[in-house]
Each structure stands twice: as structure tokens, then as C-alpha cells.
Image (cartoon, each protein chain N blue to C red):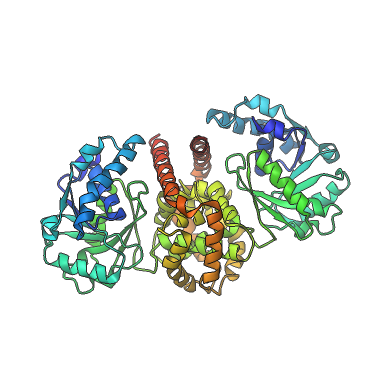
Length: 319
Length: 319
């Protein structure tokens, strides 16, 4: 792949080999980089190559890797010892459990064995870097690098610095992510939910409210996205969408529809939690369409659809 | 196509041959139904077949129609006279300008020439049927049937009844839309923005706020959708997405992430209009990425991407 030479020499460590960590390992190994994997649980680490091999076979089937799964896997090594995994490494993708104390512990442990140039990106989806790097000597080289799961199919990565993260750190991770085929975005300072989950969150809140108020079934709300709005959003963001949706571009659109959206917003100024009763009702209706016993099968369907879509987009964007 | 026999005998009129009206004509003619088109502007009506032919050729190129453009077009006829267009017709898709007085006028005019069984769906994207059918004798047979543009590529149709719309009317249009290959959803009663634009609206409002507050560039916010969230949303709605995103399904997800989304919502309880200054700033930044002179070219790119995606989805869903 063309990335090999551009990232030549960089070495990667993955700390935590859950679903997210292994997804990252595939991203970096696929791009030609040597990847050291570590997990404090030896059983989990032992299973890592088998689990990665399955994902790599799926990628090969959809034409999403040019090498064989074995060639990609050959770049990975597995280390029960944290210091061994981190020795002299350039970039660490920390993907341990999403809990402040767990994150704090691993950063303390890393402090004892990181090289002075090593940068650490955290896969945290919600906890900001400031919550677990404040007292860490290398905190200027820490930031959030939050992916969508699995990162080898959804290229977006949110880079969110703490106030003490150096701009060099942000720049270096931005370049690295670009070079391994991801699509990094710069969030300029920390905020609750970062950008990705905020955008998901507002859509979910409105969807739940519409259901709660009896306007629509879950299935029909879902179709509004999957057979409507979501089509364009799979290749254009919301700003580009509206820029092309009024003859005079985005300001024309804002003049035409701003008042409508404002008045919708004004109906939603009293945020309420999702009650247990509402959650039960949603769960019950959802189970009419998909039995709990079929959740795994349907997740596999989703993964195959994501692969097919990635291949489709690659084809479209290569044209 | 398989729809031919199922919809046998139904006749369609399209009132208003702008972009939306012509899109609808293609939907119905593609499904094998005879379609009469009317526009009060004779020049616009005269251009209709040429404009439809271009869209049909694109559809043929992407394998989205099985017949030739000419065979589909042969089902369409063009009528300067409203009464002639409506005579004995089963279903009217009203697609005139989105303005209450214009809608009111055309419903008054239709009143004089509709058969007693004719149903009228309006393409209105925001004005509810109650705003222009209150004093109309056939108001029980009127509802909103709001598409995404173009309807022959995005199957979603929101059916929104006024309080006086009969349930038979909703049921009949639901069946018709299914039979011509669209995906109708039932919105049980009128609300500002219906469902589709509310879901679009909340995402846009958060996107504009994040930009306004300096968290992210427009381009990076767009990428969060087009390289991240929007991928799944092109084949699954938000409820199904979260149902598959926690081991225990949707209620498990709600327990885990409900508090985060609530706290995000609580930061947004003071809705403000998009100021002229903000709109100018957004317009200016957007124009750095796409010159105003390139808007049409980029819209054509979007249309081709929509066609390619429709073909991709058809292939995936036919498997």
C-alpha cells in the first residue's frame, strides 16, 4: 500500500485488546506498520490473533485489503509485559476500559516505561484526556483519538486535546491518522461527548421524544434515516447537504429554513431523562422486530453491510 | 417490473412540474402507472418530458430502471387544462410551490373537477394539510405525502394526516406508495417540521452551534457524519444502530449513555436564531471549499452518488 513508505519507521503499540484495540491494530498493520499489542489479561491477548484473523479474512473477501490476512498479521506481536510492548515505540493507541480509574492506572504504569518522544492517543468515547492525564509527566503528549467502531471500516477519528496537550502532538497524530488511511478531525478543546456523540445524541434525543409523544413507531423513525436522510449523509455531511439544497447555497438555505428549525428547537427546552417506563416500552417494541436471540446475527449483518459500503465508497471515491 | 400488476388500473396526476413533481412522475411511471402532468405554466410543462428524459437516462445508466427511458416516458401525458388532467384520476400528487396561498388556490381549483373517490397527497415539506384543506369539500381525502428529493432515489415518504383526514385515505396512500417502490411512514398527527425535517433540524442546530462556539471547522463536522455516523445511517436507523451497539440491546444502551445525552441536551436549552453574522461566517468558510460557481457541478456529483448508492443498496438488499 502507498502508506508504507510515508509512515516508514513508525512503530505502534496497542494497549487493551478488546474490540476497539484490535480494530486499531488492523488499521495500523494494514497500513504497513509494526504493531505491538498488550493486554493485562493474558487470555484475551492470546485470542487476539485469531480474532484479528477473522476480521482480516472478511476484509479480504470484500477487497478491502490488498495483502493476505497472514501478511498483515505478521506485523503484529503480542506482549504480556507492558514495558516490553512500549519500549522505544512512537505512538500508543490506548484502548482500555472506559472508566476513569482504569485509565488513570494505565497512564501511571505507562509513565514508568515510555520513551521521551512517545505520543499516546486514547480511544475514549466520552471521558476527556484531562480527567486521567493531569498528573502525568508526559501529559503534553496525550490526547483523545476517538474512533467509530470498527475503525478499519469507519475512517473518522476525533482528535481532542486537553488544555495541556501540545499542538505538536495534535499535528503528529493528525498526520499519522491521515497516513494510515483514517480521517482525523480536530476538535479544538474538550467538551462533553466530543463532536461525534453530540451529533448522535441530538438525533437520538429527538427520535426518542417523537416516539414517546406517539408521533411515530420506532421502525418508521428508523426508516426516515435509513431510507431518507442517511443516504446523503453516507457521503456528505450536513453542511454540504444544505449548501446543495438551496439555489443560493448555505446562506440561502439558512434564510429559508432557519426559522423552522429554531421553532422546533424552542419546543425542546425542558430536557427530561428517558424514564424506565419509556426505556421498557422502546425495548419491547424493538424486540417485536428483532428478538434478543438474534442480536448477534444482526450485528454480523451490520458488519457485512459496513464492509460492502466501504468497498462501494472506495470504488466511488477512486473514480 | 413486478409492481405493474399490483397497481393495475390506478391512474395518477401530478400537479406542479417543478423538480419534485417531475421526480414523482418518474416514480409512478417507472412502476407502470399512467401519469398525467399539469402545470399552470405552459413553458414549464412543455419542458417536462425533456427534463424527465435526462433523469431517466441517468437511472438507466445506473441500472435503476429495467425499461428504456422512452418506455417509461410513454406512460406520461401533459395537460394544460387542470380538469382534463384530473378527470377520473385515482391519486393526485400535488407538488405546487410551498406557500399557503398557492396551495389553497390549487385545492379550491381541484374541488371543481375531482372525482368523488380521488385522493390528494401534497409534497409539502413543512406546511401541514390543515393549513390549506380546512374549507375543502374533499378534505377527508387529503394528506401530506412528503418525499426526499429526488423521490426516485430516496424512497422515504412521510404520510401526515390532518385531523379530518380519513384513516382509509392514509391506508390507501400507504399501500400505493409501497406498491410503487417507495417506503411510506405513518406520522400519526401533525407537528412542526413533520418527522424528517425535525431529525435533520436537530442535527443541523447542533452542528451550527459547535461551529459557532469554535469547536470545529465546517469541514470536520461534515466528516464526522460522512466518514463516521452517516455510514451506518445509510442502511440502519438510529434505534437499530443503538440496539446493536450494546451487548444487552437498546435498553442496555439507554442505561449506559442516557445520562451523557441528557447532559448534552441540558446545555442547549436557550435556542437562538442563526445570526446574520454567523450565517455570513458559515457561507464564507463553505465558499473556501466550494466556489459558488461550482454549486451546480457539485449537485450533479451528489445526484450521481445518490444513484450509485441506490444501485449499491438494491444489490445488497436483493441478496
